[in-house]
Image (cartoon, rainbow over all chains, first blue to last red; front, top):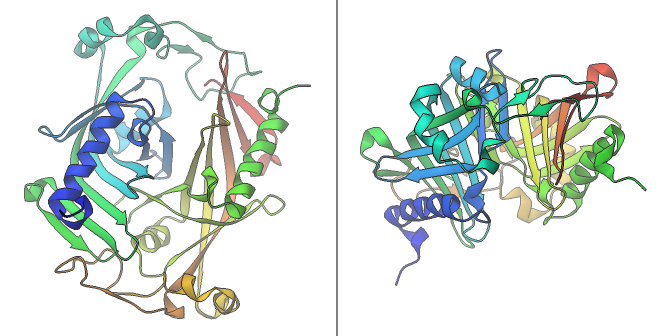
Length: 186
Length: 186
């Protein structure tokens, strides 16, 4: 039986297995991807996010954030983001280009209603995240549905890099090619 | 005795402790940061890199790469990169803005001479990294000093975010402010 990394289909399966597990398992590597964006100044930004959904059939991922955070400003300027996951046991780097739609307010009222109380407290910081404050306690939190934003990410491409013992395999899957793969020099 | 995350100085010390340990210890979180760049198309890119040096006194980090890799093209377009590390035990996210100078050829001949043979094989892939190839073995490696590039990164700012049990502390340190800190709303 061949290993998953020996075929393009196996690599794409493993990518989605990792992403799906990230949603379900708080300790899985894909639970906390890095999301890279471009600021309105044209500068790169990267931060850890929490992966809230990953649907292979829709080629979609979901991230929740504060509507007043810097990444919202960056995504309004440049809606393409880059997602990055390193899965150490699989020795697999997942990179993806994601076209992000920002949803908030009425459009996510149903989702807000389903959030546990503990989770709601993540949305609604005064002053807004990233604002200078006089000391480390100089802010307050109050659950605010108006601060709840859903980043709806449509995957445009996925690049998988497996670091094998004898061979590094790198393959690019593109939405516009129906997710067929293309080997790349690693 | 206070915990390191209770003061700005303690947080900056911990950042540098993590970075320094990343250089020395292949299993430390900062050994493999994510480096985010902006492509010549203005799109965000992110990939795992290996941290080769971190010098607090010079506020400098160093990464080695193939001169023909995509990140070189991105950095020629936009020399500012973003470095990201998540240190799980410390519950510390390190983000830094880095102004990158690309050094290669004669400027790094001494460094090439000191690289172990095994490391040299990482520089020199035909075709260049990221080029489409017919199958996963359709490339060759030969150590090539002309493909060896050193990314010399001058840190412009560092943002530390500690996820404490009762309080999340976020502080921005800027080179132009002599690395004094500024608390930010988390």
